[in-house]
Image (tube, rainbow, N blue to C red; front, side, top):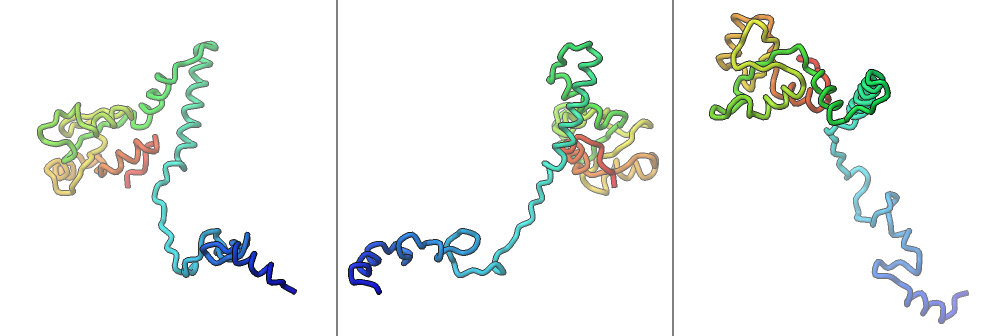
Length: 178
């Protein structure tokens, strides 16, 4: 049996949300947030396209392995990570020769462009024009003069988009050219 005194205490303990005393949990939904009138069906899930963490573990394992290989070669002397990390990155595109088409602004020297610096850090050789040793043509658009020339003359050259180069740089591995 409630007494008048208890009823008055309940009124004093009401919060702005209308909950009595410490019973605010009844006013919260199952996710722990305040009720908004929305059901779980009203929620929109946004797909996270950032998959970098999936590759980071492999990158770190590769650096770790290279560090201890150099450690063994140096007879216990600790290698400098400032040298180990570029050494590992240079292996990514070693043995490739890249040509850029539509990627470097006209008035920018090739060796000052972002694409050039990234490709060199990954171990690729870069030339201004197609040569017999060229392995990849990194083209922004399909109809450039270099792309057409590669189709006619250098049939062994693989044409890729700049995204291929950026993906190789992000993953620290030579990704599929398709």
